[in-house]
Length: 167
Image 1 (cartoon, rainbow, N blue to C red):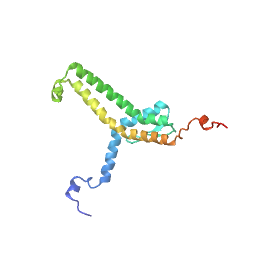
Image 2 (image 1 turned 180 degrees about the vertical axis):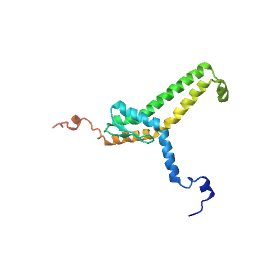
Image 3 (image 1 turned 90 degrees about the vertical axis):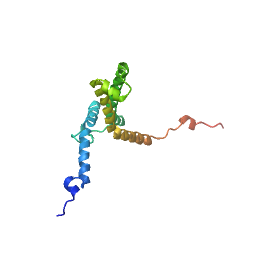
Image 4 (image 1 turned 45 degrees about the vertical axis):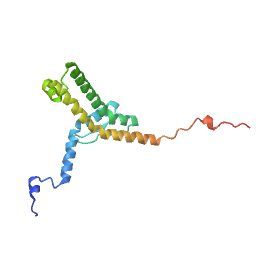
């Protein structure tokens, strides 16, 4: 049995990067639960069955879907999150302007009531959490690009190609 180094004895998982990656992947899976549940809601809205296990990174479809349904299921969390950000940020900005809070951030945090500061941090958090939709947007763009590549080229009217030439 080999002797452990000081770093290995104090932080036993630092020498096993696979364990760290696995734990971060699991933690990320649990942090993305609201995002994945929005995918499940999208599946339910279109009447398709799906499978999701708590902590997983994906929702597995159990039925075939059209391209439009796939795009809807992919982008639904972005839509909901984006609307929530716009709602909170818009309400915060209107109240900020009407209440005439100071422009200096430190003076604002000293003068604004707790509920208004919470509203600020709420929309900043939602804007940050919208980053979970990045992969969905990339997958959606690939689906659209793939669909565009499959379409046949647009030909001019057949009448123009079959014109009779004067004799």
